[in-house]
Length: 125
Image (cartoon, rainbow, N blue to C red; front, side):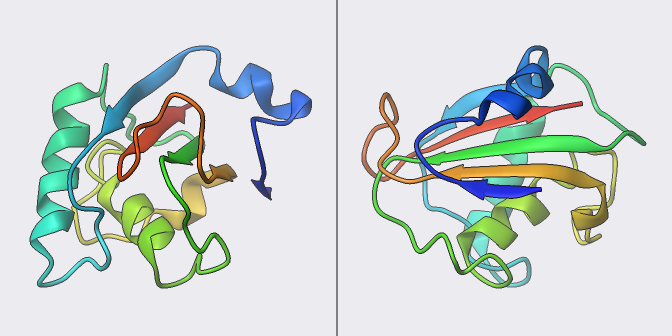
């Protein structure tokens, strides 16, 4: 399930009750996996803040952008690169595609409580 909007839909709220990662990232957003220093910075940030490494379960991801973002650019823009940057938190090699483990993706732009240029990231099992 992929949803965009102002908050987590009611049917998904329970998925985010015990996140393995929940924090705000305020650095350059990753735009691609290879030859992008921001990808490494984001991956390092995520691994440092994760409560545990999840090696096999399906996950739900909630991305809250602090400003306007092209949310329709899921396949090649910052949403895709952010998901790829979470591979290390999901117990995979940083270059491995883990999209198949994301069963729910919620994206939000101009999210309340997230500073402009920052990204709120929640990953839950």
